[in-house]
Image (cartoon, rainbow, N blue to C red; front, side, top):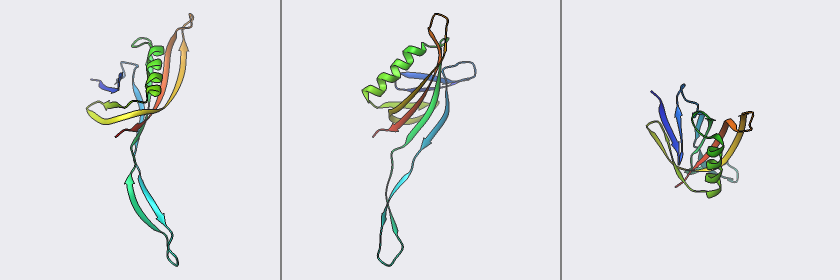
Length: 128
C-alpha cells in the first residue's frame, strides 16, 4: 500500500510502483539564543524562541504518471505566489509551509523534445 503526500496542489506518492514520489525528507528545527557579555565572567546564554521549521525533500516527476513540465510550472507558480500550503505526508500533517526554494533537474527528453522525467528539490519554511 502506498502512502500519499501533498504540498498544496502538488500530490505525490511513496511507492515503488509509481514514480511521482518524494525522497530524502529532512525536517529541521532549532532554538535561538542571545549571548550576553558579562564583565569578569563567562558569557551567558538566554533562550529566545524555537525558530520556524524547515523541510527539504526531492520529488521525481515521470511522464507515465504526470506531465513533468506542467508540474514544474505549478511549483514555479507556487514559488512566485508566496502563499502557504498544507504539507501532508501519509497520515502526518506537518502544517502550513511556503515554498522558499526550488531546484529543478530535467533529466530525460523524448526524441520530439518532450520532457519525460524531471526531479525537483523543495525547500519549505513553516508559516504561522
